Amino acid sequence: MAAKDGDGWTVCERGHRHWGLYGAAGLLAVHHDDRGAPHVLMQKRSWWSHHGGTWGLPGGAKDSHEGAVATALREAWEEAALVPDGLRVQGVYTDDHGGWAFETVICEADALLPAAPANGESAELRWLSLAEIDRKNLHPGFAESWGEVRRELSPGTLVLDIANIVGARAERGWWNDRLGAATRLLGEVAGRGFDHPVLSEWFPRVVAVVEGQARGALAPDPVEVVDAEHSGDDAIVDVVRHARPWENVTVVTADRGLKERIAALGATTTGPRWLLAQL
Image (tube, rainbow, N blue to C red; front, side):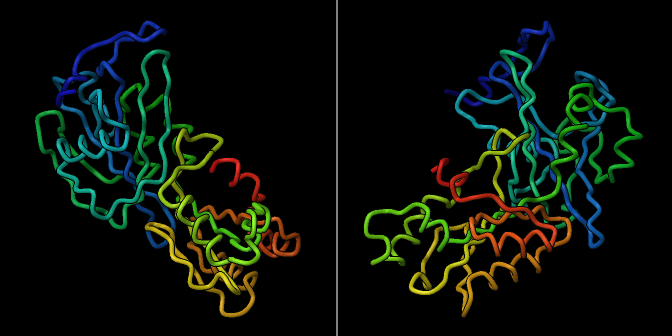
């Protein structure tokens, strides 16, 4: 395991030539403005590079010991001087060519973060709207996956009805130690990725609502805990109501009445079994 041990050309099962012996990854940083319009940080490749002059993402070869997120953040720093402060990983999209894959790491940016060419691979870095991206001469690999990736730019939020999930889990003796059961569940949820129909890894913002004897439960970062003062259902509805308009909100609950209230707000629901099957 050595730095840059992934540098080199390889051929996938489709017969395409790719840079990165262990695959490659790139950073797609997206910022939604006050109107909810997304802007993506794009890189114009230097003329001498592979597909020079085209627009794509800061990225490059994965080292043998690196995951997609680590590679994408490293390459964004090396090529665009982009620091990870102000970025939150939303998910990873995998474009698998058979024996070789490019992984797009989608990150929510809290602002139009400063970026500039940091080495010879970048000719220009610019935050572009979706319409501007469509008018650019795109890198062929990016163009191939962009149609699917652009539909996953909105950040996801997972709201957990902890009382309902703990009840569905039915650990031995949970009813006598609701605080302990809630705390254990929150520890298992924190920092993990979840199943997603398109993304190979999904890292939504997680908001856990606790009520009654479970109030005061602590969770490791980055889980946010909301102590319901009265009704847990009302607290969950309040969280959904105050979500940003461009967020995709999913509430994990089996409560029929709560599901109807959530649907009326335009959010979606899924049952506790979906979550518990992944733990």
